Length: 265
Image 1 (cartoon, rainbow, N blue to C red):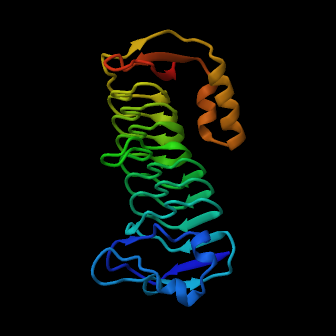
Image 2: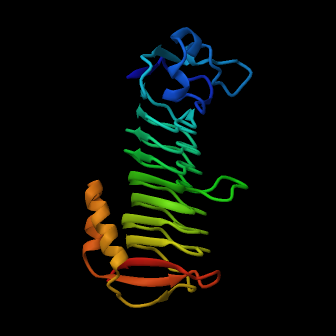
Image 3: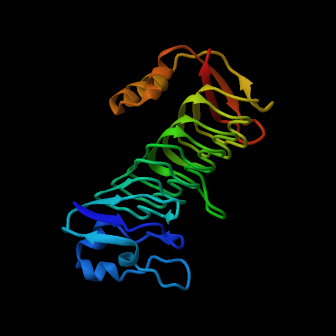
């Protein structure tokens, strides 16, 4: 297991896009220390910010967190990264495979563009978790994002594929959703599913509902039962939500209208 131990407070935001177990496996500790991670003209390097211990394995632990650690695990394609603390924006951006775990909270746009693997946030996540960054075609695109705390606004905005689990979420959860599944054990904020075309939202409750969502009864769907079994295997708290009768709403009828929202009946 390779480790990066944060030396102290960071003088600027840092970009850890290329800091993955695979990228570090062929480097000596001295070579890794010269990698540029700064975002200003200071020329900050990995060695300036971290104490580095490498063993060539596919497991990397970052000891110490900061809201200035951006794009942690971005483009991860194998192995695992664990952060003991908080991280900044775009956690796991574009991640293709592997396991990415953060014990603290994450900034905005966690898991944007991630196509595979599992991303777990032990605390809260900022706005647009699993959502699309400016001008991107899609947000989450196949990965699994688990947020054990609360998510901010626009959870899963323009999500195209994959699954998001969260404790609660702010306004506009599932906005402009293309496909995929979002399950929130607590409540959603106002206007969930705004502009969604397809996809599934399941939540313990919700705020103000858009008039372009219509109630379609309490169907007993095989999909929901299979999803409950999958969540139980994951040990997810959201599995209990799927055990009772769920009321279904279809929308957003202002768009394609093939999305659905389930809440306890």
